[in-house]
Image (tube, rainbow, N blue to C red; front, side, top):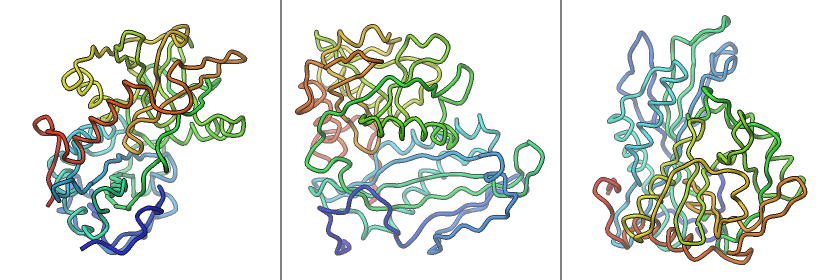
Length: 340
């Protein structure tokens, strides 16, 4: 049974569901965890997360496939990425197998909120962890909480993904040897001023450059970037300060093994932008968001793919990956976790 929700107009926003997963770390170990109907978090005023931003998160989705199954897409990679984030932030690692099991528990407990197949909607899952015990001196907390909540969301782009305009940002997103490669809340907090400024100037997003030389393209505030060359090679920037997107990794595999295209991860220089045929942002929320226009301090680059629709290669990548997620195309082994 599915909840009576206007799935066509639900939008990409928070809707409270019935259950969430909670596990506490105390005395050096995680408890067994539990499902809860309580969506409210109670914290002491000196909790580590409030003082020193010791927190990280993940994002993934559950779908109904064409054959009626409820599935998640590659949750094991979300578990691994959160483990990497926790290690960098001196937080206890939540076991990867228990992470996947907790995802499955939350989806099963909220099955009525998984949208019907064909609506374009999905059940978005947000695993996150934060320091919950008191901290005054600058040091890691002693206690933590790991949680997962679920919320049904509509398509990220209503009416299809129209190409967006982006600008080259004057701000730096991440420093060499910093935290750009992990999914820490602090990375997103520092991007808010830059994205508000970009929106005020009429742009949808920022392209951040490497902070060391400001000559290479890295990523946006919340998504990785892919480019398509004039000879149909799929290229994505390589840097140790880029968050390793699961969607990007999957798209590069699809390009090579499903579409027969050359796929390359390498340094991408700012001066190359004018030579690409297509460009798109990639991430869990939208899968692919095409870019049609890039603004660089008075210079405008218009991608040949245009401002009306996705480029040809980008569209094939999108159709193939979403086809795998929705059960219309046979997936690589281990990509789909069947919940029900």
